[in-house]
Amino acid sequence: MITSYRDLDVWKRSIELVKKIYIETKGFPKEEIYGLTSQMRRSAVSISSNIAEGKTRQYKNEYIQFLYIALGSCAELETQIVISKELGYINEENRTSLSEELDHICRMTRNLIKSLR
Image (cartoon, rainbow, N blue to C red; front, side):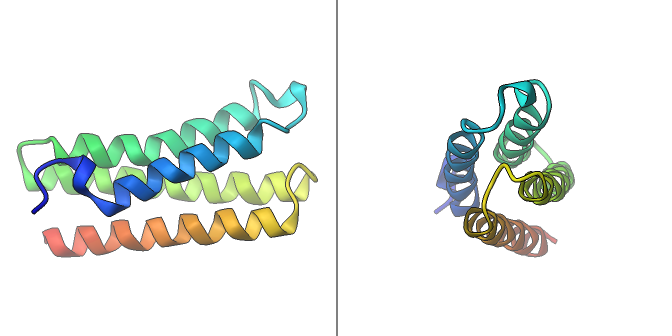
């Protein structure tokens, strides 16, 4: 039984993704600390944060709205991962791994929205 956002598999996976993004961006050039590094970290954190915040809302439509915001953050992070690869900050193997995990989280979020409707 799901009583808290902490019980949601999608929230748990999104927390794991945050950790992976922090590790990956640790090796980015120092001049990116306030640029791409910060953006990627904030986008990743936003996914799990919006899932959590939505779950605590009183009304289902509010919950769904926050899940859509999380999906927007997924799209932002996917774009930033591609940019990181294009700039040579991450290799293809890591790009693929991060993108696949992010895609799975996005699909889980969409399925959660469908189940709430």
